[in-house]
Length: 153
Image 1 (cartoon, rainbow, N blue to C red):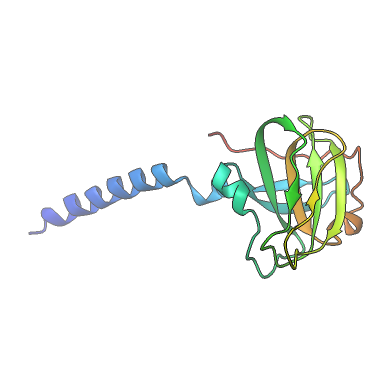
Image 2 (image 1 turned 90 degrees about the vertical axis):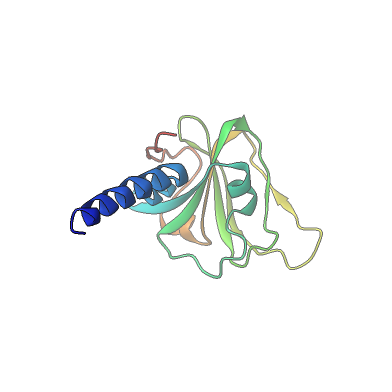
């Protein structure tokens, strides 16, 4: 009986490792983004079509040092809207060099259809959503460079 227990534990460890590998590690869903001021924010990643479509919808709050980073396959003038988004946001579009190319400040939740769209003046590869007021609080503006490393996929 004692010999069966270590084998069972080993089997559970192997199966657990395979499941974790299939679902992605939880730490692959969040990254640190370093701002020119020396501050940083923790951003949840939105890299799949489904994650980008859902974004921050239905979230009731976002801490001052948290956000969501939308990662696209190629630069585009992707427009965003606030349908089903409950909290006001700042939206920052970044190009492939991680330079801010456009900022929308204090974008309000959409209360009724049709919801307005917000888009960049220049194409971006990333969009960082932060709580409303964060861009001003951190002194973020067009031309600033943000630093971050994306996990390997």
